[in-house]
Figure 1: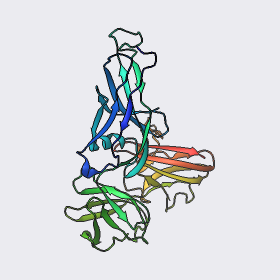
Figure 2: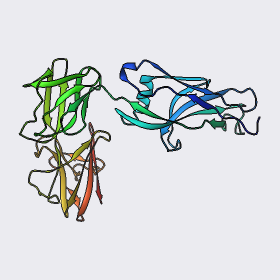
Figure 3: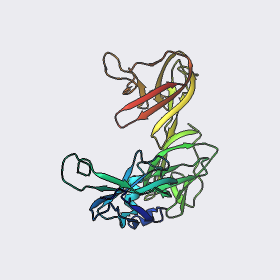
Figure 4: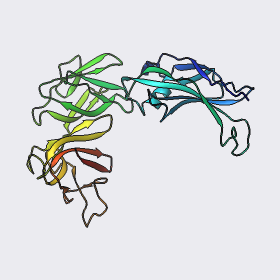
Length: 324
């Protein structure tokens, strides 16, 4: 075996502007094999990571017994990478070919299956544009936002922040179709959709169905209330903002010593009334909030500026309260 084995190399990479319409196309990364100084069999792995992170958290894209052509479909690559990188954006991503060489079936010595030789190519960096789920972009809403179709069936939904001063339209970037509204119906190239004055500006759960051209805007304003908050136990609550990337609601505000709870749309009767458990409902905490009118308030023991997050799952609610 050579004292200086030659690592594999990446000799060419494909265009990595990924598009949904090309999901079945094949991407080909070409390379050269490892040369340990003798005729060897090796396994090769095409790996990726965020640029500059030195593969501390590598993502495996392809495995093969050959390094000359490592193939993956556009759709498969997009599906793997969007677990770590944002959609509908361009990210800088590092790639490498890692070879794993086993020279013997023994147990423990260098080069054996429990302790194989591994060699990696030099890093190649590329700008990668990833696509998300089928979406409708809100045009004119005052910020970049969208609603998505999880099943790709023409039914879209999502949390959107709306302003009564900013009527908006919905645009399908795949078909270049723009939808406005006429009453409760969507209309191709129709008038802008207006935000209802009651309850007014804030977060909404929007649904749109381009099959029957229907849509709904349902207010979904998560707020913090309590004698520790600026408005005490009176509405309006201190409203939280939603982060679609993390799935968390959050707010930063000044609190005084007292207690808080979470509720929806400035009302106790809208299905979200979050606090701590009690003797009747033990085991509930910030990591697992109790959703009921009888839940205990959450104590704030020191005045100051706080950042609060809230996760609303299908059956579990959790929060963090951090003093800044």
